[in-house]
Each structure stands twice: as structure tokens, then as C-alpha cells.
Amino acid sequence: MNVVLPTEDKQMQHIIEKVRHGQRLTLEDGIYLYQSDDLLTIGQLANEVALRKNGKKVYFIENMSLYFTNVCEAHCAFCNFRKDEGEEGSYTLSGQQMIEYVEQHFHPGVREFHIVGGHNPHVPFQYYVDSLKALKERFPEVTLKAYTAAEIDFFSRISGLSYKEVLQELMKAGLQSLTGGGAEILSDHYRKKMRVDKADVTQYLQVHRTAHELGLRTHTTMLYGSIETKEDRIRHLMQIRELQDETNGFLVFIPLSMQPINPRAGIRRRNSAFEDLKTIAISRLMLDNFQHIKAYFINIGVQLTQVALTMGASDAHGTIVKEKISHAAGALTPEGITREDLIWLIKGAGRIPVERDTFYNEIKVYE
Image (cartoon, rainbow, N blue to C red; front, side, top):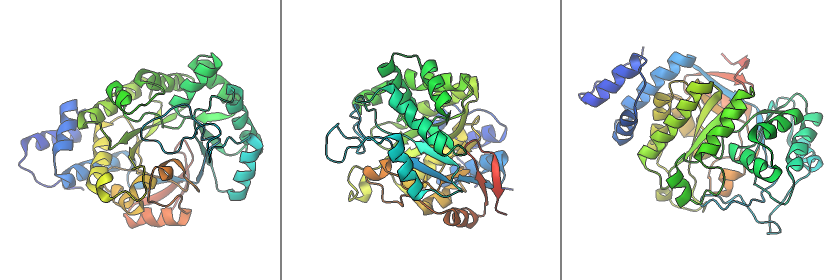
């Protein structure tokens, strides 16, 4: 039994009662939680919800992050991964080149390829289809979790196909789930200020809605810690909660802590540990219709991830092997982690590690 710390704060008491009675939190509730400095109460309340939904189980997957191209037509203000065609360090790999890369790092435990990349207008849509096809033919047993909603919107623009047609072509090639990226903050004002010149809010949500209608379960994110307000964050959570009410197609929500462009950037240029934990906990409390909230160690570090497992997170992500996007933007964390370290990390938080597949089917429970 969890004991939420006694508080004389009437608004907090009201929120505790709502959560315990399964009542949905409002915009005002969410903003209030962000304004509160009572992290322990918020974290314990989120922990109660996580335990109610998943018991002590915390999930992870053996996966690899793959990036076919870093050439991108977009110039988002927060991105240090993108390159222009011909710029030093730019690349576009063929399916065969990617297979050679995978074979150097692959081992039989890998269950998922997490595939994202730049919006490269110098190759046709068929290139992106063939990339998946090549991987699926060579590694038929590995789930292809590929492309962001923003990439799907980009493919639709370069091919002249509808979202549905784009997704159907990719599914024929082996696509089994969409990644969560491209959401950033679901606010048109934010997207304009941060030069997010890719899928807008409506388009992001519509791609996921279409994917869910086609039977794809997908992932979704929020990139927080730049110019957005606390209200922007809560409205973001409410928009994906609304779509989840409609489709029940999201598997997990992943809060992504913004990384400074310069790896040597000082502590004041990063989100605080307090802010990261609070965001995970508030996400758990607001997203009552999501089964899982992920603590993404690439952005918040392995030790804070461990703490997050007692504050609402029920997923510790995966082994990754070699992450590039957050590290291009200054992440100071490991580029990957071993299965043994993930198990150790989860057990250290008093939780039960569960190896899963992409769709949260349990592969092995490490009691």
C-alpha cells in the first residue's frame, strides 16, 4: 500500500481524490501539478497509478536504432542530426549498406529495428519502401518499427499518395509500427517559433489516426524543455489522450527531455532532474488511457531512469546499440546499454524486469 504524503494543500488533496477514484484530470489540474514543488506527492501518486496498471513489472526490449539517411529538407531549430545533401558528414544508405551495418552489430536477441531519419527529398518514396523491404527479407523475425508521423507526411507529399496509401505501401514492405517522433510540442505557435517545418499538429495526429485505423499500434512522444509553456505541455498530453480515447492505438507515451546543441553546454542549459521526474509523473497522471509511460535513459540518464520507475514509468526502453539523434544534440548519456545492465537497473528500483516485444507481449520475466 502506498501512502501519499499528507498535505494540507486543498487542490492537491482534490487531485489525489480524483486519481484514486479514477476521475480524469483537467487542464487546470495538470498546470497545477507543474506549478507545485511537491515532487514526492506527485511521484507517489503516479507510482500508485503505475502499480495499478502494471503491478511491479517494468518492460524493456532488445532493439537497434537505425538511420538510413541524415539528409533533411527541414531545419528544425532543435535538431543537430540533419545535414544538407553533399554537406560533410551527410549520408544516404542503400538497403544493402544498412544490412551490412546491422550484421556487424546484430545478435539473435534483437527483436526490433527502430528506424527514423531525415526527410531526404533527393530520393523517391520507393527508396523508403525498398529500405524496409530489404531489412524484412534479411531479418524476417525482427519487428520493423519505422518512421515518424512527420516522415509519413513527407512521403505523402513527395509521392502524391494519401496517408493511407503511403502506410499501406510501407506495410506491404514490412512496416509493423510507427515510431513516436515528430510530435515535439503539439502547438502551432510553438512549431512556428521553433521552425518545425514538417507535419503540423493536425497532420501529426491524422497520420497516427490513419495508422490506428489500418490496425497499426504506434508510439507517441513529447519533446519538452525549450520555449513551450507548462500549459502547452498539458494541452499536448490532452490531445494525444483524446486520440487514444478515439482509437486506443497508442502503445506507450515517451516524454523526451530536450538536449542542448552543444555537448559541453552547462547544467543550466538542460532540464533539471526535478523537471524530468515531474514530467514523467504528470504524464502518468494525465494519460489515464495509456498503459505505459517510458523513461528514456538516452535523454535523462540511467540513474534518473531508475528513480523514474518509482514515479510512474513502466518502461525502461531498450538496448538501442547506437543512438544518434539525441547524441548529435548533446546528450551525455550512453549510446546504448546491455540487457544485463537494464535488468540490474530495473531490479535496483525494486521492480520486476520483463523483456517484451514491440507490442508489449511478454517474452521473459526476470523474477
